[in-house]
Image 1 (tube, rainbow, N blue to C red):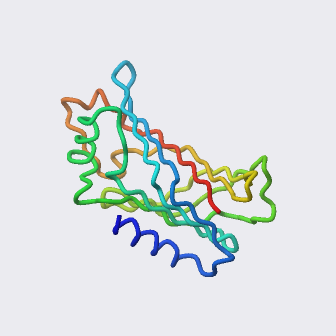
Image 2: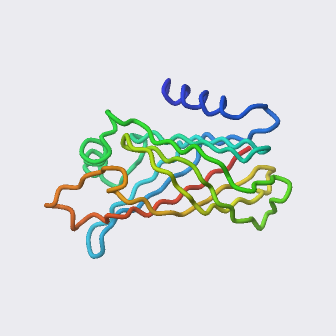
Length: 180
């Protein structure tokens, strides 16, 4: 919990003024790495932190790796110990900018923006460009949703050849944040 508080504090420091930021402490990140015809490999993390500066479009998010939940404890153990090495690399971050972001032009229908930034995971930083849909919510916040792929090799995540055929080399990732 202390680590989560520290990351949240850092994120808030990235956004300058209180009236210029929206924050989410319980965002969702879901990924699926299932290979065709094999057991589903899917996990969800519902404790993702995200902040956006509504004046500049700057965005930052933090995902604590150990908080991903799988349908079996063994999958979760392998994910944390063998693949993501969550004791060594406990978090993944995304820091970037939503291009041409204007909070006043966001509607409940939503608009698609390009988010450019740096995704850091498993000790590797990679420049990314992600299409992101942003819409106003009925309760006064904004929703940020995106679907994108992550290649395991881009982040030096090694899969033993003995089970490599059971695991997709490209992981389908979805994010969903409600910010206020």
